[in-house]
Amino acid sequence: MADLMKYDEAVKRFDPVLGLEVHVELGTKTKMFDAAPNQFGGDPNTFVTEVSLGLPGSLPVVNATAVEYAIRIGLALNCKIAEYCRFARKNYFYPDLTKAFQTSQYDEPIAYDGYLDVELDDGEVFRVPIERAHMEEDAGKNTHLGGDSGRIHGASASLVDYNRAGVPLVEIVTRPIEGAGERAPEIAAKYVETLRDIFRAIGVSEARMERGNVRADVNLSLRESPDSPLGTRTETKNVNSFRSIERAVRYEIRRHAAILAAGGTIQQETRHFHEEDGSTSAGRAKTDAEDYRYFPEPDLVPLEPSREWVEEIRASLPELPVERRRRLREEWGFTQMEMRDVVNANALDLIEGTVAEGVAPAAARKWWMGELSRAAKEQEIALTEVAVTPAQIAQLQDLVDSGKLNDKLARQVLEAVLAGEGDPAEIVAAKGMEIVSDDSELLAIIDEALARMPKVVEDIKAGKLKAAGAIVGQVMKATKGQADAGRVSALVIERVGS
Image (cartoon, rainbow, N blue to C red; front, side, top):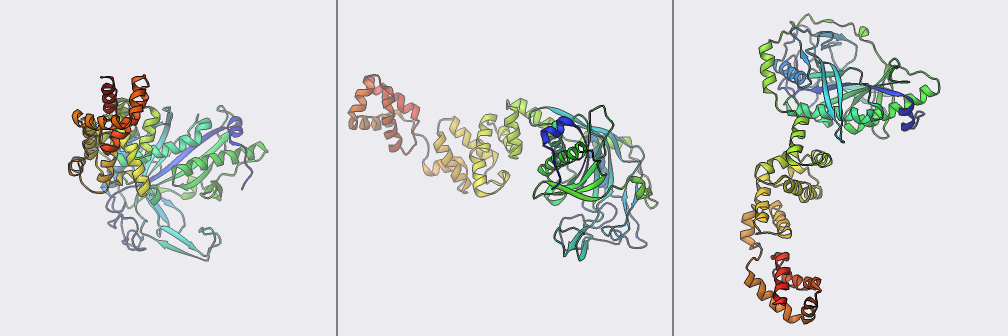
């Protein structure tokens, strides 16, 4: 591992500047420029056509849905939508695209000049400036055999699967992100997380990072102060989890700082991120744009999205995730920390659905973040996969609110619901689980207990009211927990005092 400076010292001595390039695979039925299926997995080289493989004489056709999705992303990121834009050929030699070029957008992107407000866990909002969001196609997947690292260095053979070649992508490129300071790693991760949530909310991608639907290239440079010129940057490629993004930024800050403090210079290069220890290693010297020999794609006509179409798309956008969370947090009276925990548990939709069924927000949160989260953990499943619905939780809470169940009985009923025994009301009726609310029935049990425990009667008469707990315990045992302990306690004291 490279020499590293302590993080606190590094951010005290240097000013970090971020740049993030996020790729999202669009969830269209077909690829960007041909009719091959846009699907994950499958046997290698089965989701392909002549266009996917770049065979001679094949011609691309733009996927209209992909263009719409790109505009949706641009609008969600407060971008301007181009009235005229073109595709370009990005030339490079690598086997993951048989054409030896990638069809992308260069100087004329579909969306540009935007921003995204990122809300951090403590409620602080940090604005990330966005330079552009452009359309392009994904490359195929290379598998390198015979080496220790899984990379081409040291491999004895390579296999290429072109199923992913041609999948529609939008790449979102930030401007230099300044002013992040010591929170740079957190801001980078939260920015990508916010993008992921937006992609899902506006319906353009499943945005599953474990499948590579969302990938981030993390650029970082250091300078002596915010007034100094930008430093030389490195680009850590294809980081695909929020935790890894945070770790990559933190590592590069420490590595850059150690080099600069020792009088060295930063090599402009790509870097590989290593999950096992959070380190990065050198890839290749960073290629400048002119080395790709961009030129307009002659086989595709320019795009000219009408303003009417753009406004129709804008009108169809749903409430964005950050705005929704902020609104719900205020409506429900949750703290910033409580809402963060709800979001992290993927419980927001479940709680909102339960509240819509008439349950108080605090009660809905108690069920989903308490008993049901524990059940999900025990079953090793996601909270959304737990076998109970918001409507069933609402019915259960209504039984509690109406005094028919106490908390202990409600938990037992919930266990039965999770076991597939029916709705809460059905379970209560079938098992006779309602609280014993008939005072005459309770008094009969109380009198029996008092007769067996004369010392308790003396203590209560002497003002030792806590002694009533022994009688309450006897009554709860006799009723199998189906009594209101508070009501029983009041009846005991009333009985002894009368």
